[in-house]
Length: 302
Ligand code: GUN
Image 1 (cartoon, rainbow, N blue to C red):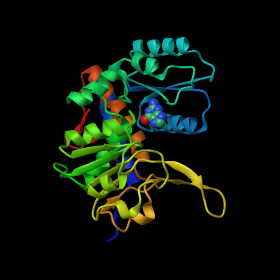
Image 2 (image 1 turned 180 degrees about the horizontal axis):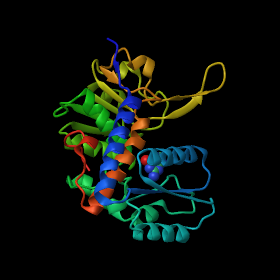
Image 3 (image 1 turned 90 degrees about the vertical axis):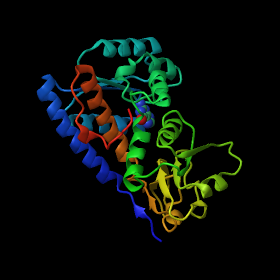
Image 4 (image 1 turned 135 degrees about the horizontal axis):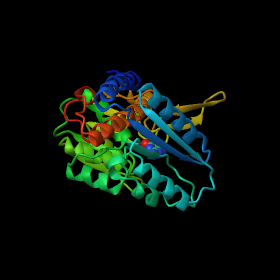
């Protein structure tokens, strides 16, 4: 069997188009555009690329972008003061502080300072708690995008065995909460897990989010399983240059899985599409405008 390749790029483009239509409706209703502030401290090359893409997507969605690029030696107090200003700015509906922050800044203090109702990343402890409690809030963009792709190929998730590999606050933990809310039987595996291969072999759904190239081997995959590869790892290409690979050995898994996301072109593009969705939803909530149902598959959490 050869797996269905899940086209995250096409899904993301479709979601972004639906968000742009919904944003046009919001602008009519509210008389203003939704606003998204993105804060970047320092010049980490990968973060700079992400922030540029986020700002471009914000403009393409018809939203206002507020870009704040600060030098790497910006102090924590200065960053907290900027967050305070963005919290108080009525034109800002969403605030994203790009991670990682330089080591002299306490990232958790910065995230906790963001108004939970503008926390479109879903990283604030209030939104973490809302997700765990099944309350409306903001769900982190990468797991939300992963769930959207998963639901498209597996509309009936209830009762399935799912393994999430990785326990980060950005992906692993919220992904596990989302799968639990879908009534999957969820295992969270991590670097101290004793027999990862056995966990993966049981799973109908595998979500890999550890940042170890090719960690999940093809012969670990249960035939017909759905594989969502969140890893984006730059590795050396045979014969020179570099390439992006996921946490799953794609060549090995593609002959066994029922469906699989490629890297690149799988989960990656969904992250920014979901950020646009969250920023639009935030503006709707803040202005009391009904959310256009087309931005969500039915029952989308957050
Ligand atoms: N760094 C890597 N991924 C993310 C993300 O989704 N949000 C933020 N703020 N920083 C990140």
